Amino acid sequence: MDFLRPASWEEALAAKAEHPTAVPIAGGTDVMVEINFDHRRPEALLDLNRIGELREWEVGEETVRLGACVPYTRIIESLRAELPGLALAAHTVGSPQIRNRGSVGGNLGAASPAGDSHPALLAAGAEVEAVSVRGTRMIPVEEFYTGVKRNCLEADELIRAVHIRKADGPQQFSKVGTRNAMVIAVCAFGVALHPETRTVRTGIGSAAPTPIRATAAEEFLNSALEEAGLWDSGQIIPPAVARQFAELVSGAANPIDDVRGSAAYRRHALGVMARRTLGWTWEEFRGNERSARCA
Image (cartoon, rainbow, N blue to C red; front, top):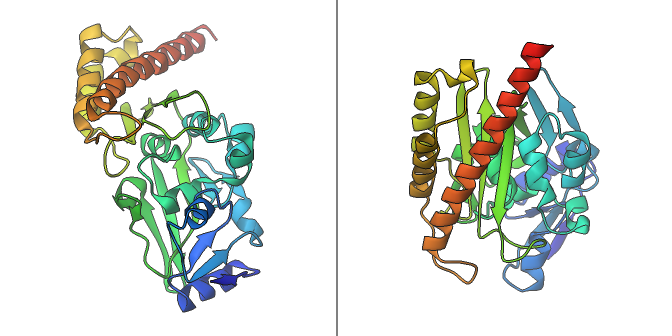
């Protein structure tokens, strides 16, 4: 197995073009597990640890540009206000050691349906910056996943950064596991309120071949909130609306039975998480609106 260690981003792109089967590695929290268990034996590893720019982030007016190798710990410590849903998801990743090494870029590269960052990225609205020696393309995150542990990157492309919309409203993330820490999700759910556009976005993890949005649930809730004037009035969402939203989230899933949980349980748990996280985010939104009116 060859081990490639580029010293710059340009060298990394050239190495990936010359060795398209090389597997990028930075934190190694997914790749090394697969190699150690002999589930994967790549011809070459492409070490990105010497490229400092991949561990940097930039907070813009509307988005956060998150370098592919920014560890989860930095998101928790420095970007909680701008990316609250992703920060909550980052808290659930592995152990402190894994959070210090693992990154959103690595999560995207692995493209596991159980990756903890995916529901938050889908709910917030994100784009993946994919680069090769041929140029750069921006990929909406919902189009990035193509199958179980597969993504749409070309053989010569690397993830440089993820561009994530800054929160303009409350966001939540919820995860069910077989224990409280260091666990792969049985299922996960993210929701984000976007008051500026009066829309709600969702993200489902570990309940379909890829991470997905519950688009029918989003469309239903967007219409219900608008028709009832709830964005303006800040009144409580009627229980019937919350129940219908939860049912539509459950219906969006396409889960399997496996050692961590049954398909039926995953659908049920998703409905519970959808109803609860909607309640939490809406109550936070109402509180923010009351504070704004009193200021």
